[in-house]
Length: 519
Image 1 (cartoon, rainbow, N blue to C red):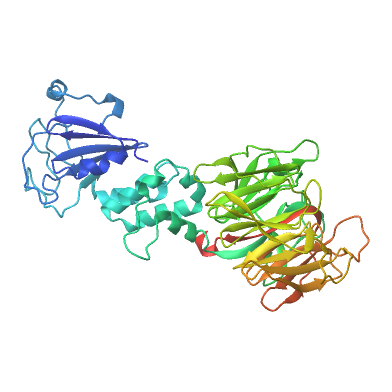
Image 2 (cartoon, rainbow, N blue to C red):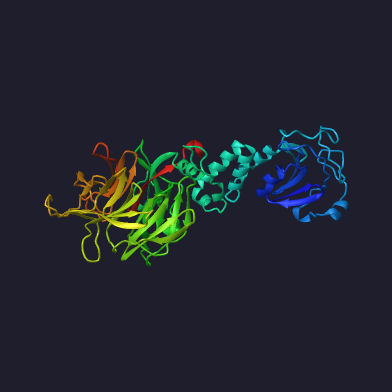
């Protein structure tokens, strides 16, 4: 990346960073500048006539290509400079003279306003657009925003697209850059979207794939049995109904962590909090980026917590409750920071929560005194919890997902306490119910009496809810997981092959993985 630049304009030597390059190259005066990339010295010639301004003859000075630290400035220094040659030129430059441009003749006519800045690199002459194209392979986190802006100024779609691709891959890291808000100009026309929205939407391109995380203890992993340590991350191939190891594994900090919260935000998988078997609760937070196949540690929560719910809503994360905890924290990826927001009315245990239409709904569990029969709603914009409804159904240890205005409640232990109750039993069976937040109606959907409704994990994926549970008909000390799907449109079950590994502490999520052509 360009580290520094020095220009000679009207006998004065100017130094600036690459962010000021645009100003120097469009100032309307005759400029010769040198840009230093690692190991490279670039000479740039700028015509006097720019933006329709009349050509003016201005004296200038120039010295041989030295390190930036060796440059000096001022009239006295200019007088003492030796005569020197342009690369590829037989002429020398004196104060007040114009250097010969190879092939143009000495002191040829000034370039028109339409002609590009000329760049001389290793005795060759390039337009400035060629220089910026050279930077296509040098886009980094520290320069992507500045290069994106320069690409816009000079009309370089290739460089602009390269910067956009880089920013999509590392969206949350780019959001934290202090320069990012400077690029967020408002949309120019109805229907246009901001840069932030374009990047966010671009992260949802690719192939939606189910990814499983966990402590896999054994079993034949497809396509061949693993050798050595079993992988801790698997991806599901729907065409063959097989699981394959991902190229990455859980970071060491997440090994043997239980009771954590998980959520998907901007196609990042967040694993937050929990507890370790050998220690107390933790507040650490990590995110998995499937577009780069990397784990990153992000800011830790203010409160250590476990057995809580992590919910993504309106481009932020909310850590709700926990073991004997009622407070709630909000994570903003633009600041990489957690802040406390309005707490729950009461501490809850064995509850569940999900996002639905921009609000957070909390259902079930226990308060410190009794069953929680209330459905609580949280409005992020108002930072307010309200009692949404009191119901006749008590449920605990369930999982929840939403589609439009409907919340799907998967598994858990169900108690019907109203006059319309079917039974007074609380059985360990896999059930799916739905709750409509507009009509406030409950619907009992499918049951699967041979599968457990407890300690399951599920994810909304394509047209159904994919569930990883255990078969209650098997008597074994190992939890052999079964993998099945509930089709929310057909109201039907579909069973797949058994999960190819024994294990516990499993999590299943749906992420967009890059297409092979994009990797």
